[in-house]
Image (tube, rainbow, N blue to C red; front, side, top):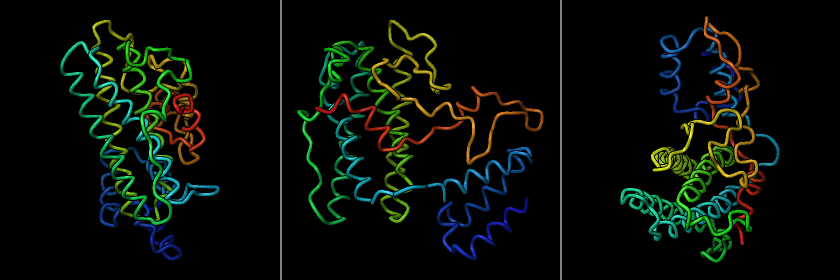
Length: 282
């Protein structure tokens, strides 16, 4: 496969192909390292994945404003959750309380950025939220445990962060037309991922412990997330990328379904995210 030739042909009909993937120099740098990192059989998979990211969106794409309004709702949900949580005294160590305070401040920054970005797009003012917009019992599913039971509080926090990571990934194609907003959204995406990683460590280090808790998702494994979070890991059992099945044996290395499902975070649609967070919306 002459990847460079294919890219040049695509560029004849889409002069922005490199911008869709990465800056031109970075794209060629990435391909230059393939020989050291991947067996030859894996190169078509990687190339297919890149094109899928550039052109994979389908159906009706929401406007940039619609995506930001949706993100604003999620960020407010997280901000008010951490605001309440950080004010509790159920943390077994001061470090845990400090971590929740830091995450709260991150989420507040995200809220402020999104409100500014939405205002900059013109039209109606961004939606305003308060703590009263959210039901912390999850429509009664969690009872009064959200801020009184430490393991439950951590599990809810991880569920919110994992959902946020996948939601931003799913929304990214709709932001391609606005480079500044897309860059900021991807930066928020990376912060949400770091939050999720830290929360997993906090759950692992709980005095009571969490059996078999690991920092990745295998198939639809909840990792101890309460069953009330319906559909939180739906789609994570995927074993194909860019239409290519990634299970099998490649260069003597066998990839089974579990390993294939662990290797990628799958994007969530707006409908899927709404279904996950719906119980928390008052």
